[in-house]
Image (cartoon, rainbow, N blue to C red; front, side):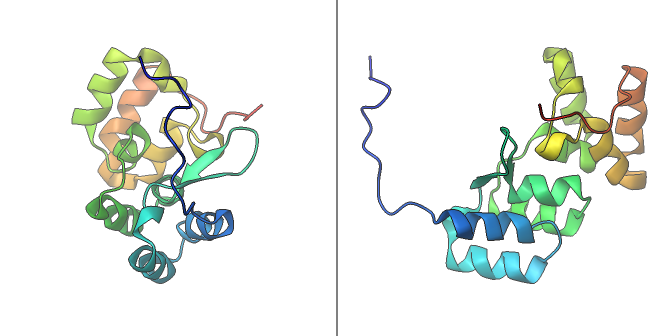
Length: 147
């Protein structure tokens, strides 16, 4: 069995300010995100802690604001997909089996406490089927307090 701390931390670490900038810009600024990712590819799945356990990646940022073009760019670059992004894109074939397997995820907090219902609403017409499904399951909240 491997001890929890047996793996040495490899240097260099990502600069926290750089991660915060990258994630922050992923809410709206495609050009800056592309430039930063080209220069620092390891930013792709980096998460910034906005406090109170509110960790957010660039994909999470683009997804909760409904920026599909930026989210698609990040997914094409290899970002780790999740159920919130699947809801944004109306991917019922992903959302339904995930909720069948893990029903409590219906009420999970995404970045900043935004729920699956919020993400599906941001998806617009493309996500209408997912939105209806979430409502049928009893989803009502778009945002849940972080603490």
